[in-house]
Amino acid sequence: MRGLQFELESGQQRRVSKAQERLKDAAGSVHAAAFVNVGDTIQVDHEAGFLRGHGTQVVNGELLATVCGIVERVNKLVSVRPLRAKYNPETGDVVVGRITEVAPKRWKVDVNCRQDAQLMLSAVNLPGGIQRRRTAVDELNMRSLYEENDIISAEVQSLYQDGSLHLHTRSLKYGKLENGQLVTVAPYLIKRLKQHFHHLKQYGVDLILGCNGYVWIAAPSESGKSSVSETPMDLSNDHGSEMSSKRSTTLIPSAQEDGKRDLSDDDKVRDSITRELRERICRLANAVRVLAALGLLIFVESIIDTYEVSLSWDTAVKDMLAAEFCIKIVEREAEHRDKKELAI
Image (cartoon, rainbow, N blue to C red; front, side, top):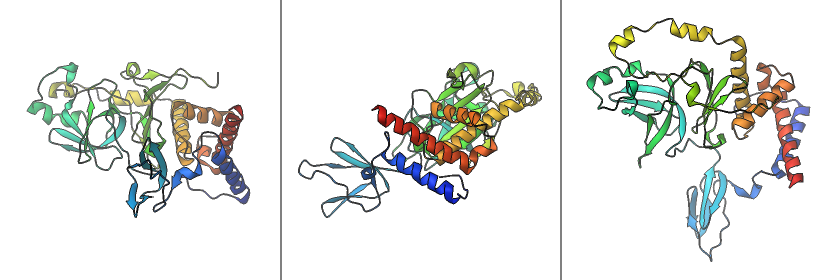
């Protein structure tokens, strides 16, 4: 169980082993033959020919794996997808990141990649959506938009051969994220979907599933409600968590506008977050942590299902990270896959 550390009793160890055996042969599981270690020979058709992909190398006429992972075949192309790796960005990916540096005409953003991404000053909206060239005044006011340690949502705009990537926040749904909790998981556990922004109406919570493995769970803001898609599903009818505050689409203000701000606005927003809402946010965050620790795919339905199960079992928020709850989730997943196999 990755990410969570606890000792298992002998009875719990037997239950986990039994559930793992059931999961190996259940429907939807990857066959054991698809897993390879470094140096393992990958069986290919030498007569028909093959193309060597990432994670492989030809030695003495044999195709060997250079990383631990899963063998993937697309026509004649054979590659190995690593089980654990840094985020591999693609153009159009929705990401959640942390500002690490404010540089001239750009921000550097940690997006769980091999190197920090860059968000150019020209790639953000100006106040009122005005289209014009950025001036020296805009550059001087960059910190009024984003500063170090701010959490933001953005989209991958372009990739370069040296591995660097550029982001943009030209849509109102992107911007600074506040009033929420950041959970870090392995990027390969995030299921790529058409929509990564979700408003869980039944809980009154916004959810952003970053393709880079950063999951943001927060209280909805007035400015962000229209830009987040509603997820109207009600199933009842770390490493890396950070508390910060509401999504804001406020753009670079002038010095006069900045001086007119009401400093009590942030306090009012924080006071509006009730204890019940904080508990729902923490329960959803723990549901994500449990799924990540068990190596299960993370998407809206799986998060809501784990959330509802914790309520039906009368599990306290803090007890969701205990060994017993994780074991019960594994057993439940094995049972569901067994039923799916029988249905097939």
